[in-house]
Length: 473
Image (cartoon, rainbow, N blue to C red; front, side, top):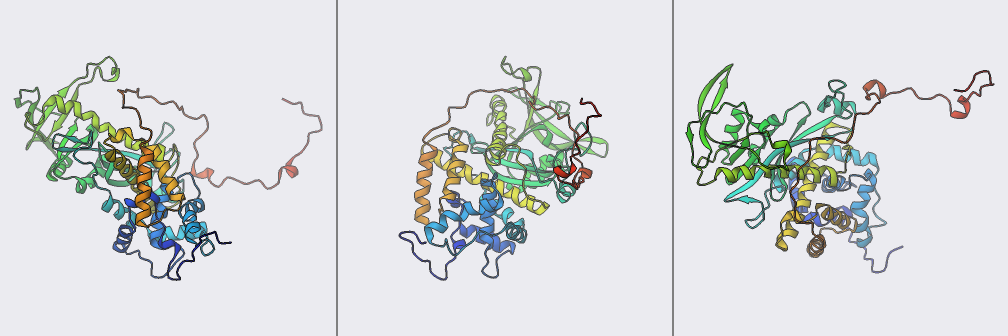
């Protein structure tokens, strides 16, 4: 029965034309989604129950509602809009099989292009913690995501090794390396590959996201002579930690305690001096509350050769900003995806598509947080990512479509909501490198356990009551 005020939609309208992603639609508007679909050659040739634009928003919604089943995610996308707009009796939720086929038809490319087109640095000059002098602070790091335990995923991505043997990990894993803005936690570049591909190898795919005006921070495991030179050619400045056994002779000691040196290039098994000049900053931490760093000498190399432009003490104090990437990963893997949640896609292409969906959705949530912080003159660290995620989910379920005025009003309400209760100012913290969860006493699940024999009888038929000849133990 129609609700009061129900207006029958025009015949040339479809519910799916108005499906969006709530307040996150401001980051991924329908025009941009349609553009990347066309560029990828995935446009729908006829009116379908699941047109390509809807499937893109559905993949993003899979990340936003990671604990929901396939059909429930679809209901969250369309149910509120269908009641409000009057399509309730004209559209039914597709089956899981139809959703699987639609996702397979869409493929990975539209989601990858959507990430590349939309996910750009978002900090403004006044964003706290986003800049060092004239440089935008960026960080490189990596992580892994568990994917569904299927033979296809296992063959494509591989598994981590454990103490029980090589490739004995519980789930296949996809490795992701990203370039992120430290001040806003906005991921602006990403590379994916199998678990066996190292982070340093994947990081070379991020060169296109680096640009002049950036100061890129990276851990010691990312350094190689070739990658350093390729990253420097992009115009970005670099501040990377390097290993303690890296041979860097002192050529000129500078007034701030740093020194100038040149990298050596390894050709074959021989080391030869190159013309790549660098500045080296060495320091220690003198703090009783940082016990794990007491006996460590830290060594940084940078393309910033002039100590007057970037003093050594400031660069050393700046390097811990690299750990903002770890906070980004916590947001994505714990508060957005859910702790220990496995990506649901059964095929490698589906897993990559879903992973890009998570990256895009995280970026949209960070854009919402940054907008709220900017509107109220706050540090983005004070705005709760979890509160923003809850508000975004509600806006989707409420049926907020593509209407411009409704979206603007909903954004204003959401910004006010997420700023209603702020996080406390971040305190100084340190944590030991330990884990709480020990290894299980059970054996590891292997391929031969996948098709375990099934019982032939129900319990009532299988029970055989003993007549008392055997003593109970």
